[in-house]
Image (cartoon, rainbow, N blue to C red; front, side):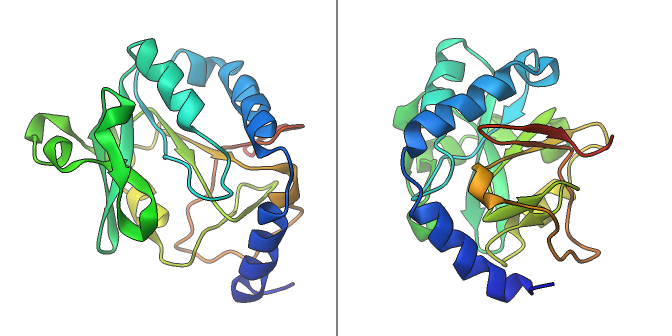
Length: 191
């Protein structure tokens, strides 16, 4: 099996060369919205998409229009912290150029969201497998964040079909996903 280090650049290249990311992303979120645990959740942590990731801005906008409780992460060094946002205007380029909550949101203590209060986490990554293993960028940001989630929280990977492998290398500290949703498949990893 290839190592995480050798897989990362290969999977990034495949994802970057993928055509039609916008319609593919829309199909992924259509599939995700058909799952009751997501559709009916009152507390969702999404990510603001960056570069060639599954696009989330349309989903974020739709959730905000529906007045859903929506949180997004902001990077502080090695840690991700979650904040409740109320509009797309509350996002700006942050660490690594990734859209994150603006300073006025971060400085408002009422906007801070504890990870153990989130019901559903929608998680990006470079690659995933059918067992729920995730390959991130290697910094451990999401593993540390998800380690603080409640036991009942549902962790969902969204990725393109080209990012889904049969098996990824994993380590004891890696947090597994409960679901993996692509444009052609919905996988419950606990079955």
